[in-house]
Image (cartoon, rainbow, N blue to C red; front, side, top):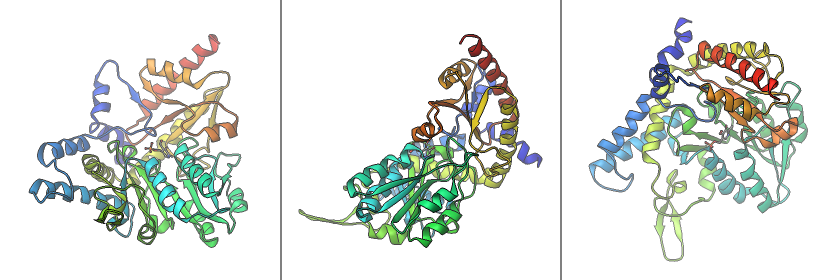
Length: 417
Ligand SMILES: Cc1ncc(COP(=O)(O)O)c(C=O)c1O
């Protein structure tokens, strides 16, 4: 248990940005891990090593540098595949981020497969990345979008889902853990229901991949989208996972080098998976850095991370609940035991941007706004919220300091409003 409680003390040392800040007089407390995570030294060193020692293009040159770069790049695919318990690394398609992964599914699978009057089910808590691509496909293929609501605790309303699922549903595309409500959606139950109607399921796993184990086979899903930078990895790299039998049937989205088998003047044939979906030179250093990040997280241990984050989330909620005027959106930890280690809240008559700005001046980084969830905010009748998001590097002192400064900030804004 002590090992788990000491997690932030041990791991913070690996994160230069967090560690250097702890030593400086203007110490900052980073509580925006849901927007992007900080990077451990192991990842920074691996990227540096690639550029210094074996920088070359992949899959092309016959020389030793290219062979080494290709080996490390393809090893990254294998690390991701094992992390998800996928059947094969050929099922991992590298993208720039999760947004591009969802767009790839929407364009390559959606446009190719969906017919007029088919239905796609999303939820009201989706990130814009899991709404806009489907709106675009729905407009083009004349399909209909349906949105699952939330219950009084801020969890997905499963009865509403059941009432919206029909034999016209061809895809259910849902977030695993909401970046705003923090709730963890019951994906296995949803998948079981969706399969009974013949629908596929896409999982937006951006907020869950660094916090709990994900097994794509056990979940029974058909697509998964993830972003490297939320996994302690670099920006510019993400991935789409899907089943080989789906990926083999659908057309590529981008054309160019690397994704072809033969090019003739009038037409071309496609390369084998996964290369069919990866046109042009990929983000090599970023993919290699991402594998190092996943290995780092695996070393810390997803079970340890999950257990530790549960304790700090409970602590955060207790502290926030002591502050009058604060309204938290999303289920409390006692109602959703798998919820994320984040809290999203608002204070009546005070704009969340003012809270975030004043906290920033006191060295505390949080996020404010709609968190790319405008439909959710509109549904709740709120313009904007403040969000604090933690990970295994956050300790109780960080939370205490944040709570003290938040109290000061709210009092100041109340007096001046
Ligand atoms: C739940 C969720 N989905 C999708 C995204 C989009 O991720 P990216 O901007 O890395 O594509 C985010 C990013 O905040 C997110 O939190």
